[in-house]
Amino acid sequence: MFDNFPLWPDRASTAAGNVDALFIFLIIVSGLMTGLIFTAVLYFAARYRRQRGVRAEQIEGSTPLELTWSVIPFFVFMAIFAWGAVVYFKSRTPPGDSTEVYVVAKQWMWKLEHAEGQREINELHVPVGRDVKLIMTSQDVIHSFFVPAFRMKQDVVPGRYTVAWFRATKPGTYHLFCTQYCGTQHSGMIGYVIVQEPAQYEAWMSGGSTGPLSATGEKIFAELGCVTCHRTDSQGRGPNLQGVFGKPVQLEDGRSVMADENYIRECILDPGAKRVKGFQPIMPTFQGLVSEEQVNALVAYVKSLAQPGTAAATTKTAAVVSPQDRPEPAHSTGSQVQ
Ligand SMILES: [Cu+2]
Image: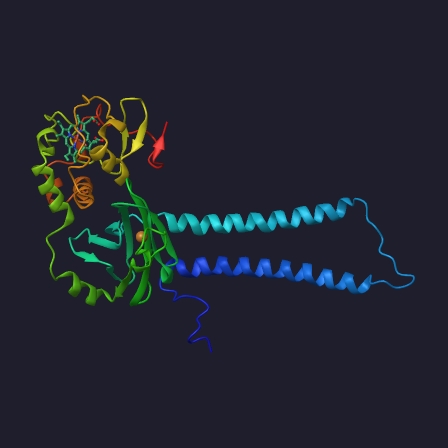
């Protein structure tokens, strides 16, 4: 019956069921409340309509009544809050071993680059059943990455990364929309997420790649002269970048921050914002000298240096970094600890 008028978009991700369950619960609670109020209005209107001998009694303050309408809603709202928090945190926390895709939004298109090197425009191919993490930024104004079938929506903001993730559960082609009004052709800023069976996906992946994004990053790292300061033998004027990513970094001003994607990005574009403890503030800014795609490649390269076993990181591992340069505070989570 609802073939041409579906009540819900497809459910094609692990998050979809959770989001819908909470949504349906909210509709039921609101529906019950609305029903209760309207029934009471109609009942009292009929019961106390003007007629001889029937008079409504005024209740002036009643502790049991007030307790009832305070305590019951309190528990209902706390349940909504707790349930919402669980769904929210799940959808905000990408699993550690996700496949990564860098997204650059611009007026009016989506540019996507897989960590493996494949580039796409307005189309994203992903395998079914694998966690995919999107590391997103905008080249111009605010956009928003929305895939209704995944119940996933995340603003994409210029000047920083925002992160989202999903795990597709059903092969198919799903709509991708921009849901922040971003200029005249905002409505045309659409695309598709194409979810494939693993074998199909491997076949797609094997075609036309320029090599892993981290390798592109390594090239840029050399071309821009980053290597002259960031050497792997601790003789450079800048910190050895091996094993930096994903660990807390001690700053000159005493703070400790997590070296995540946003931190690496900021180091490149605004090195003055967070100076690493124990080094001269000599790193120049690369703002305006590198495109968003190049920053992504550099970030992917610095990340690859923190993964033991990758070609670039096999020569030396994080253990080589001297303990004074890289103390390990007890905190291992949280992006900023005092
Ligand atoms: Cu847009």
